Image (cartoon, rainbow, N blue to C red; front, side, top):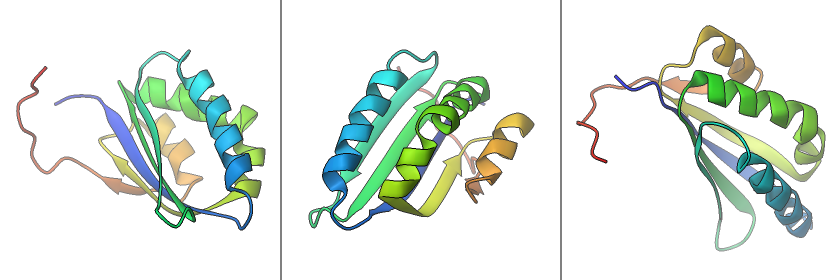
Length: 120
């Protein structure tokens, strides 16, 4: 069983704030590039440009915890002024420390039902 953790977050961009959210996203991407254990850090915008889907994947709970701690201290205040979170879905088996952080986001948890062999 792999230790990877990932999540998908559904966001609604507050009216007129997409450009500001794009600017913040660029800062967040640059920050994530320097973090250990970040495997994927992606954002997708809907055709009507009102919704954003976030997909992030981490090597393990320690990497995800470090990322969230940095997010909370560096980006969370600005982030919350630009978007409203609709869903936060976590995939994998987070450590107790990571789960405590994720609980502050009202996350829903999904554990592996069965895994295919890892192909690299």
